[in-house]
Image (cartoon, rainbow, N blue to C red):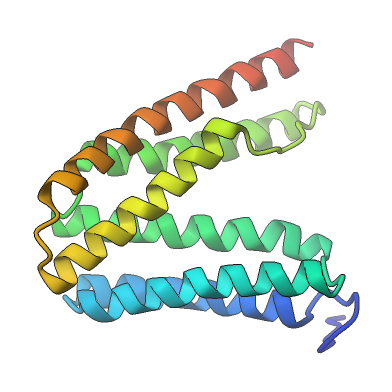
Length: 187
């Protein structure tokens, strides 16, 4: 049974509906990118960022946080970033090695969590500081590339710097999660 509430503690409240809207934006942004509509993809990316801030503010300010929202919000963010990175990689706007590193890191984290559940040693998922820095860097890189490609801003050097920052943070984040996972699993 699905419970729909505009306000209150129900799972489908306003913040979660906004988050679901962000999930719906994922294929739209991907399609805009692969069809060459980078300006529109940039504006959709901005809309997604604004919606992320708005749903978080509403949830905290009005006490509308839910378990669904706790899972859905980071999932929506990750789906958007990964889809943008894949599309930009296919377009040649990001190096393949970086796209592979970003996607592989996320897959390996999910596999580690699932494996810990299967082995009846569930791991608590808590973002690490390096992971938060990595997410911010990925968002900045996506925004810089979308803005540069959409509006021809000449951001070659900032793009290059951000590519390497994201690459280093992605590897560092994976290493930190792997270390924490190995410590947890060994016990």
